[in-house]
Length: 58
Image (tube, rainbow, N blue to C red; front, side):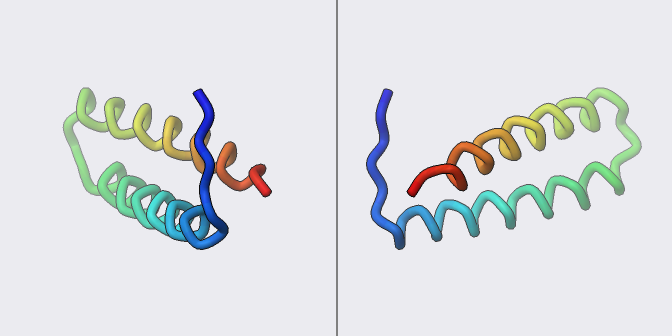
């Protein structure tokens, strides 16, 4: 799959991903439910990997 983004779209996507990662980190810190915490950590990892892929694009 190939995705073509304008510079503005790339910037918006990066900002959204960074914001979501910060929110998830906060939620991980505040939850006591082990299963939910693991689910959040998996989502955080996936978002960080996606952010890395987006940041490589020119």
